[in-house]
Amino acid sequence: MDFGIEVALLLLLLALFSAVSFYKKTISNTGILVGNIVGLVVFFLGGLQSFVALAALFAVAEITTFYSRLKLKEKHEQRTTSNIIGNSGAALIVLLLGFQQAFFGAIAAALADTTAGEIGMLSKKKPRLITTLRRVETGTDGAITLLGLITGFFGGLAIGSIYLFFSGDIKGFAFITVAGIVGNVVDSLIGAVFERRKLLNNSQVNFLAGLSGAITVLVLSAMF
Image (cartoon, rainbow, N blue to C red; front, side, top):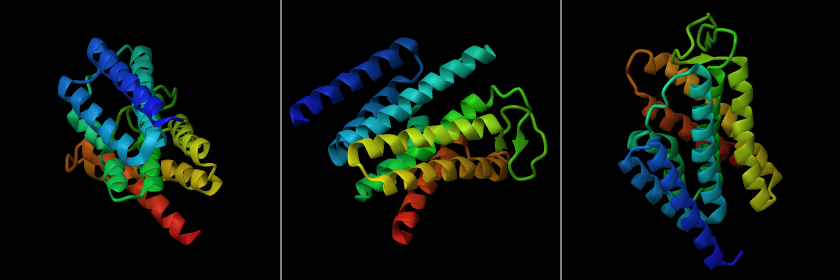
């Protein structure tokens, strides 16, 4: 695709992201600004494929959050700069270091965690705490459901599929999909051990989960 067309597409998607977020008040004004900056940096460092993965993360996260809140009849809490950095910070760091495949791994982990958390809350069965497997209340930090694990898998698979579409690299696709699974589990483990005790907040947990996804890809790439 011509670079000029890619830039035009980038600006169009960023404008759409900003307009919808501002109109629906789903993201704070500073969060919108930071989101645009992150999008621009990702595009110019990682190209269109990396930006598409990032856009998919934010789009699917908003859609699943809106859907779950609608079903649960709860108000959609406004995302802030902290949420934006928590979900994309690890991915941005590894991209700055030149590890594009690891970037996709971090994004896969972030999307897997988000979809698992939002859709998992709709499970008809009470979740289990990942560290003890005892039943806990819905929304408990570190709680998992079968529905959440399945949707989380498909979240990671979606990011892996974007990578495969642009690169044709089946091995990388597999690594990124696995990274989504790992990131989702790591998020729940850290949530159960640290977030429940108020030692870490949600954004910090999300950052570490994304980092685990990136590391997973780097380790698998070194091994295979």
